[in-house]
Length: 382
Image (cartoon, rainbow, N blue to C red):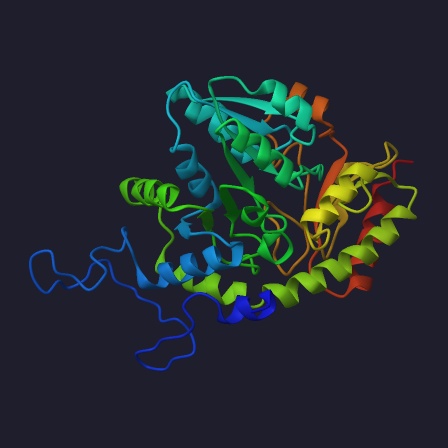
């Protein structure tokens, strides 16, 4: 089954009991049992809910994994995965990873003596040199948020397996429509499903997929024990969003290509970060492991342009946290998504104060270009 069809008919397709073509919404906290220890597959909705199970089965199938897990947010999913480790274990983390991932390790798990180190995971030799006895996992984003650095998933996975480590990949930017890390050797895949999978900026959700039964049992125990589960209604909304992922992503990507053409010809933009126009090595690796470049762009404004004035002058594109919705969303990483990262680390990574991140929506491309042109004309300092 091709993925465009799988997105619509994969997992649990409809309701066999009534013939309904959509999965029912089971708004129940508990389930009747027929006797001591005799239930019909469900006991309590924290442990399992049929609507949540439907999205969990679907994402596992789409990613090529053994089991999927639905959480109340992307960070709840990441937190649950971090609970697989114990005090004094160490995680190697992509250096310009999403700020929330950095924050939960630096401000929360650090209190429980779980260690991390920021590493340029695009450099396999460097990663190999950082592997010590206490390292238990390599956590990567590819492309990274917001600088779009590319990591070789297959290369990292082979390196991790050689040393008995887990490979964890945040696949939020690419989605399984464009990239399937488990098929490239990863052990765990994470999604902020709030983004492209939901696609309409109307839900908060996180998903995790694992590649073997042992990890599935451990992560299910954590999900049930800690309780950060995805609600039935958000599960239902997420299934609905996933059904249109292919057509949305195709339009997102079409718009992105045209917008990049515009930005590349504009003197107000000094640098663009996007898979396909990054360095040759990055492009080659990305093209081997992903179908297309996605719909996230980061760019640097020339010093003659005021970033705050530019963002305030946009009329159509919305200044907001998040990404991956049908509407175009723009953000200022240094003060928004990556504010939790210390300024000296941001500067070293290249997350400068005039860096802008744009999630390209599915509006008419001419309207998006006109909006940016207008904002740039106002933002230029005289």
